Length: 117
Image (cartoon, rainbow, N blue to C red; front, side, top):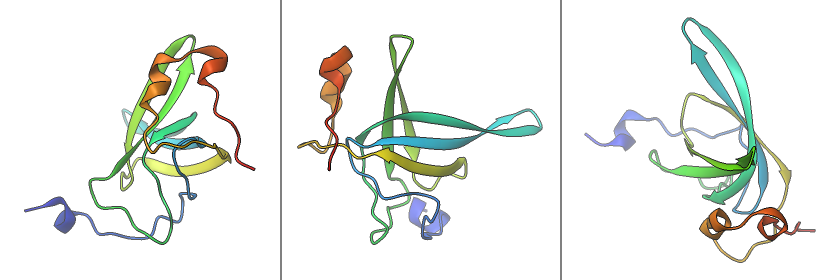
């Protein structure tokens, strides 16, 4: 049994098109006991891309990174997760790589990504 047979592939209308370097706000469903709430996580895409014309495979993920109180926090989010409520792109980034792992070693102004116009 493989993951493709367990997950039905459907269009992801709640996700904007994005690519590495973009600044996004990801709204995630958090379950605490019997209550649910939506929590926003804003950061840069350092791995993964999405276009509406190509539906991602069942196991595909993307990584969002942000710096919170001087500590880098990364979240690996599956595209087809039921906890993924929505994803909005707030800023397009101009980068020349598909995986921005080098941002892990940079801080301050060096870690900034230029905006695509």
